View 1 (cartoon, rainbow, N blue to C red):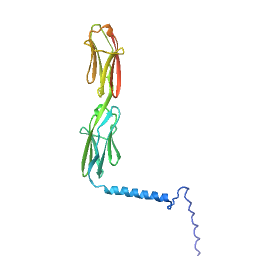
View 2 (spheres, rainbow, N blue to C red):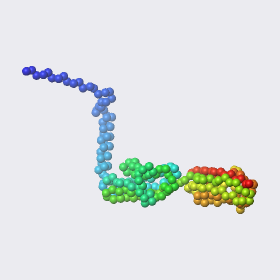
View 3 (tube, rainbow, N blue to C red):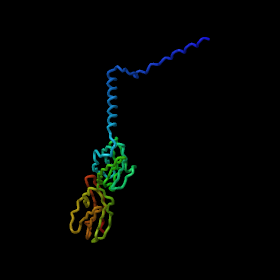
View 4 (cartoon, rainbow, N blue to C red):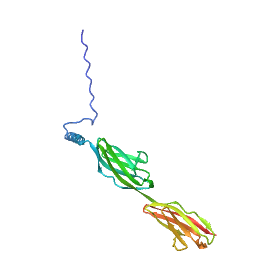
Length: 238
């Protein structure tokens, strides 16, 4: 019985253009050396990390949060094995979510982003970095600044001649805003009959023994380094 004829050898298709590497090319050899050196450096750094309790390498710093915006607290840590991170505000743990976001930008940096800033975000924030060998803490404050604002403007009034007019506005702002009152576009000059008072969250303009000349358009304005606001009211004497 005769043996079957051997199958014809398959032809290997040449690689597409640009997919070949010449190992004798000096540029290829140089690139290979850089890759090997980078790998050895990474392996050496990993092997050099010693197990132990976490350390704070770069401390948290106080930050200013503008109302309505976001603020970020961050610090640099060293910990091996990898630590468990917990953030808290004034002693109360903060859960990672839409309001408070835990951020890990690289293996050594932990951060907390506080979104949609409000005055209640003012306080002391603490990060706890913990692994099986121990725990490290650090704290910093978030200082909230609020643009000057008139939460509720004065109401327009009609009063009889000789009565007392009281215009009141609710205000806010941190730093505390400068407050002023004006009538028909002119700043009010206070005296014993016409004067205004400024409290933490309100301001009141008083006009005693109202006269026809007191009728007009009254303006309250507030201003700090973050913003300005104003409101108007009409006073009629009948």
